[in-house]
Length: 267
Image (cartoon, rainbow, N blue to C red; front, side):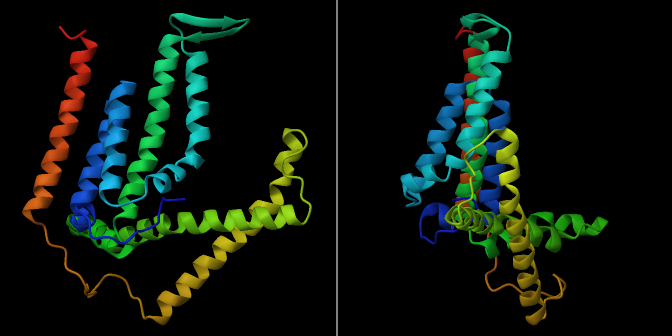
């Protein structure tokens, strides 16, 4: 699980202001939903992987982090391929595979993968503290209307950070239940659903225990919210941050323009 983890480094992506990275990731996510051509979405995904490799993140490590979303993406591809009306490519009884469905399903599957990949790329190159400070800085204008910027930033960062922790806890519980002879992969659908009960209950108990430990740790450190809080590292926006955001915006505009040109048949 790569989502929520942080890998220290000194690459260009690591040194970018976290607010610039949030802006770039936000632009990329907007492009994910604006683009519908699978080839352009694949190009965006290759670009994201190239950024990760440039940040000295192992390619295999990033690809393994996408395994948990692969089944959901495959399910989306199959549902769209067989349920979307259009030009029939293959037919068997009531099942009809259409070319429009395949194109839409592949695009939807790539969107799901890209959302996880982009979020993972942000967390892998940004420490949780810097990410929290960046979110607080971006939300700070809302303080004039009563928006709790610090609290929202802290909760978002903690939720992201707890994703790999809960996944590791889930794997540990599954291995423990299998060692006790639990039949998690046998029986019909109802029996398998009932077999999940001995897994979900300990997982929720563990999540509440982690939350209580975190609350006690914050209380022991006299945490009182963001009022009067100082920062060890001050965020500084530089020319390279502006250049990176402008460059990302131009690339995404070119991708959308290329899709519109492609849609008109290149005329």
